Image 1 (spheres, one colour):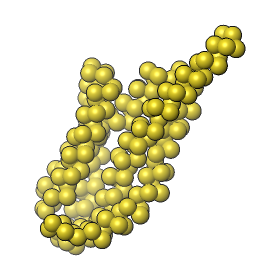
Image 2 (image 1 turned 180 degrees about the vertical axis):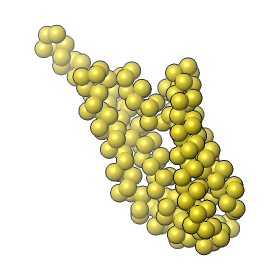
Image 3 (image 1 turned 90 degrees about the vertical axis):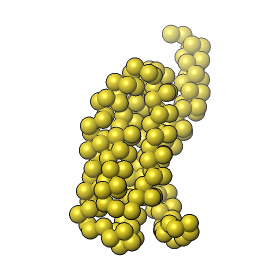
Image 4 (image 1 turned 60 degrees about the vertical axis):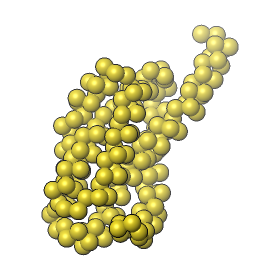
Length: 176
């Protein structure tokens, strides 16, 4: 490749990265916010709803059972319908299930919603990686995956203050 082609390909990669990576990182931030917010919510939720530590622990863990059981089927569906459509499905369904969790009042519904949330979110990370293979060559992909994964520590930085603020919100029959 001559120098002019290298410069052009670098510009194309940079443009793709600026359009894709921030949104993909934002999706991953939201996914991890949900995972960390549940631990903050436990501070008041367990007492408010009468959940024992075992109920909370089961519900928190059952999320990963749903994730584990549905990750392969989710990835097969992703391959069949395409990454853009499947990523959209994941975000919409997990957003809906996250909202429904606020209305859970008993242990069984809480556990079911956490399981469904894990099932809905399954395939997010592998789907993102697959989508990156469409846009970035193997020689530069690790750099862009690292930028995308920067969403994990970012979610920890912003998740604590947001969760703390939400614990103080009252109204419409919902507490914290």
